[in-house]
Image 1 (cartoon, helix red, strand yellow):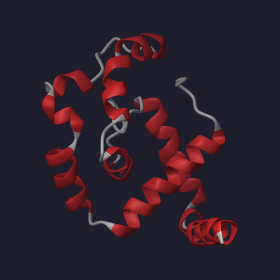
Image 2 (cartoon, helix red, strand yellow):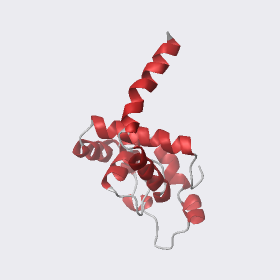
Image 3 (spheres, one colour):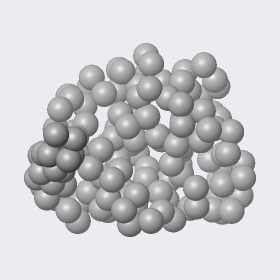
Image 4 (cartoon, helix red, strand yellow):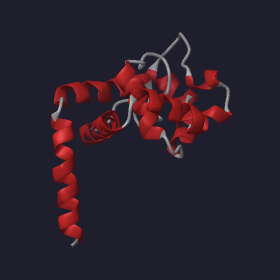
Length: 131
């Protein structure tokens, strides 16, 4: 994944964050991530980026960590926790670098409640096609 993401990817991730935000209490999100996150099997420092940050270096250095996130059962909740608490400065959450997390955060704020309003019609549309 590039450091910057396609708009449809950012919008999809913002939709996922909004869904978590509207369906689960933040304290429950945090405890679920701590209990079930794949990262719990590793040293926590692995997911924090150093002080000499460049996007190119972060992409290379964090490839293994981000691969661990790909198979994590609570990936959306982890990303949601970071975005909703503003913890997007220096660590990987949900397989995304801080710059990517901030893109999702910005999209969530730009779309406001429109993200949530899109969900039922999107689900309804999928159901109609399947029928």
